[in-house]
Amino acid sequence: MTEANSSGWHPHLWHPFTQPGRGPAPLPIKRGDGVWLELEDGRRLIDGISSWWVTLHGHSEPSIAAAIARQAETLEQVIFANFRHQPATELSERVCALWPGLERMFFSDNGSTAVEVAIKMALQRSWRQGGQRHQVIAFDGAYHGDTFGAMAVGERGLFSAPFEPKLFEVARAPWPATWWGDDACEHKEQQALSQLEQLLETPTAAVILEPLLQGAGGMAMVRPTFLQAVQQRVHQAGALLIADEVLTGFGRCGALFASLRAGITPDLVALSKGLTGGFLPMGVTLASEELYQQFVGPEPECTFFHGHSFTANPLGCAAAVASLELLQARPERFSSIEARHRPQLERLASQAIVQRPRLLGSIAAFELAGASGYLQPIGLEVQRLCLGKGLFVRPLGSVVYLMPPLCINDQELEHCYAVLNDVLEQLSARA
Ligand SMILES: Cc1ncc(COP(=O)(O)O)c(C=O)c1O
Image (cartoon, rainbow, N blue to C red; front, side, top):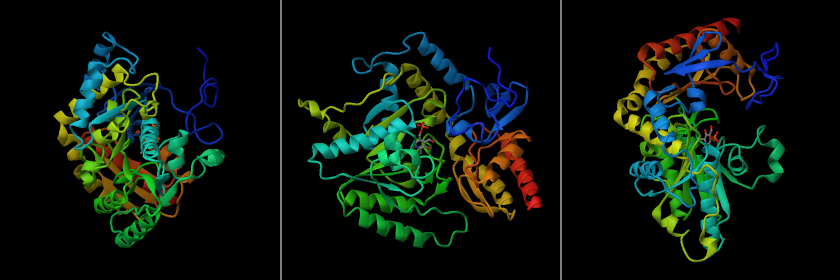
């Protein structure tokens, strides 16, 4: 076996969003169990961010592991252009039953592809209708993934700069993020809505948003009433509303889906991450029967010419069915987690260094006073100090957040806040 070098970086691995010139080497890990990660050196850490927001119930959840093992012995993979199988049909029936008006499920591989598919469906629909509706509208601060289409609709900046000339044009509306004690919220929302109205005067194929919470953009939360007003304007303009629920879906936001909590009914929905409980990579895009019917007909150009080798992988589908079963069997796990966070975040927010605290379902976030932006080194420092105390977090620059797996118990949640409290006191004392 090739060993890592003395700085801890392996000679053959290339990790995402990180590199040896900036920041510590990834830690060798042995196993995961519930909220806990166990390193090869025996240290145990609470996974405070659900491993990039995918681990829904907890690591190595036995019922999902068993479902995957059972499925692997029956059918591991088959070409989905020519066959259908029970795990896919069951998953589509179960998920579509939760979404009034969305009866069709298209499978892909991850969050980015689920978004790509939604955008391509909206644009192909427009093309089939005569191609007048070219415009796509997204929101400032959005993140929809790293493939080209998903990158195009996301906020442009450091991540997308090398590819800028190859990204398609997107119109942008402001995202009126809010937090506890924000007294300018209504004003920000009005401004955002009037800008959106202006943009919608241009024929528009689709408007894409992350309902209730922009994740990678800084855990930026908006009010349900804002989303309802957006939906009303989008539909009035004859455009499609795409909800990117890659992060917010499957209980993360305190309800099964953020759109349901916000009282909106999008035309296309992208799901991934928690879909398989975080066990296997899979994405799905939900669409209405009406939209689907526009892709049916004798002309070849009706066809949606998109597909991935692993479309509707049976193992992923079996994991997703097992995960959904668990979620629905224990709804209190996601419906009560916001109330469990609240008093702890309130206490933490009494520290002057904690700014703009906010909470949505299993996600608690705040900003560090005196710092703003993704490249703030303070985020790495918070990560380092928390690791030393048994908590894994990965701040988005100056935005610190907790998003633990839903299985976290009270004692473990208290431990997360106690660690953050200590670390913030330490940082404040240095200032
Ligand atoms: C809202 C949202 N959309 C899309 C994506 C992309 O998902 P993936 O990383 O699985 O491609 C992410 C990933 O963090 C996300 O948060």
